[in-house]
Length: 166
Image (cartoon, rainbow, N blue to C red; front, side, top):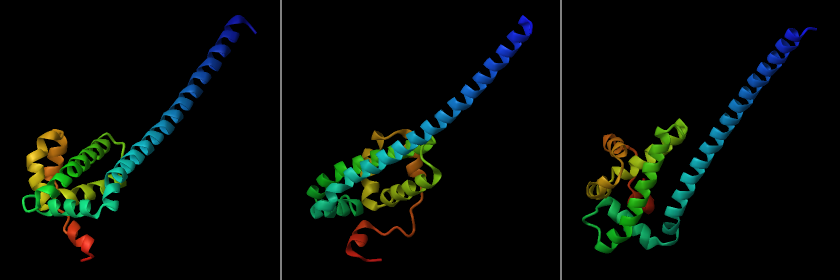
């Protein structure tokens, strides 16, 4: 074997090594992307649990929230005090979910669940009043998305859900 043949074989082996490395890198990137998606979904879920957990142990908070969601101006001042922080936090969480779906992080089916949950709250009369007073605190794209949504016909108001009425 002459030097040119040995050099050609070495270049071929190096090229095969580079191609194998690229395939390995692509597989690692796919695995990392899946892992990051799982982390985002898990984070959104834990944030929602942390937000709604106190309502599970405080019926007065749930009642105040339900009253404000249905009729912001008709709710007592104390009910609005209790609801304002929960509404702001939950809508920031909704905004985060919206950003995640826009980035392609949430799968279509995951986003469908979030979209229904968002619209179930947004289209309540009390939330609409609150939103008109706080909408500027949210990203323009999220505001546009939210304000263009349609109510869910079969969405039962929170007060009826709590009372067990269909």
